[in-house]
Image (cartoon, rainbow, N blue to C red; front, top):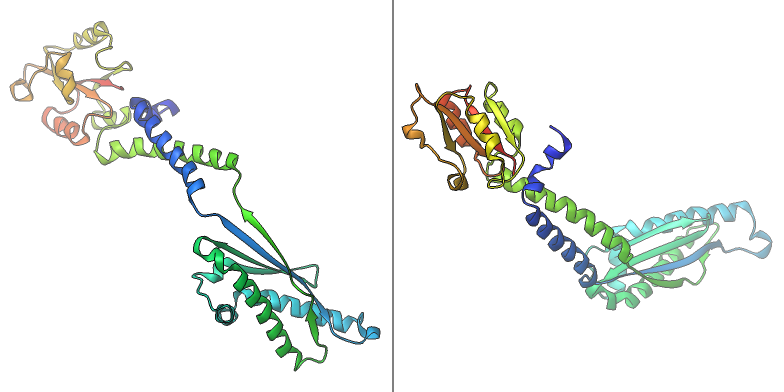
Length: 295
């Protein structure tokens, strides 16, 4: 099977593919404008040791502050700390664990990020204030039992809108549109149990002569088909798709003489049902003639 043979379900119904492609692509691009924006809030502060000036640069103090900065970054994933923030802010935010994160940078610097959208956006100020208050409160509790207490600088807050560039959205929508419309083309024939590829016909009739017609039914080369049918003794055309009766003289299977006549099956990919070919093989056996219209 060549690459173009593999794409035959798409080429048989190009307008269906184009319609699904434009609908899918348009819907995905429209969703980019309809979905609520996401805003990212970042709290930045530095952890520093609290000690006399002559001790402020001692390794012990800096190392202690560095360890605490790592611990502070881990609080963002602590369920108890998250609940304490919500309680202090007196708000309800579903999935706060997914929307809040923290990381340490350059030993003593800590970044807390909060991503909110939709109905949670008005709660941002309360949540940020609650985070600051809870950080200060928790650090004060740690300092009670610490030989080298630490403190944090006043958190600085920055806000930015998280928006995917429109060019990226268009490219992604086009790629997904191509993939989805192609899948629909294959799924339609597979769901309806239709014959999609010439190899399926060959598998059912391995010993039969097969004429491959690349043009559409009605635009086919009649001489080519006549030449093929005349190679058989007493050929009888048997259709497996309705439109064949418009262009050929069809013989009903019930009147076809198995001893005298040679059945010539007219098969159209994407239309002929797989089980019908299997039934015809059981009726007439292998070694008959088959004309396959690929479109």
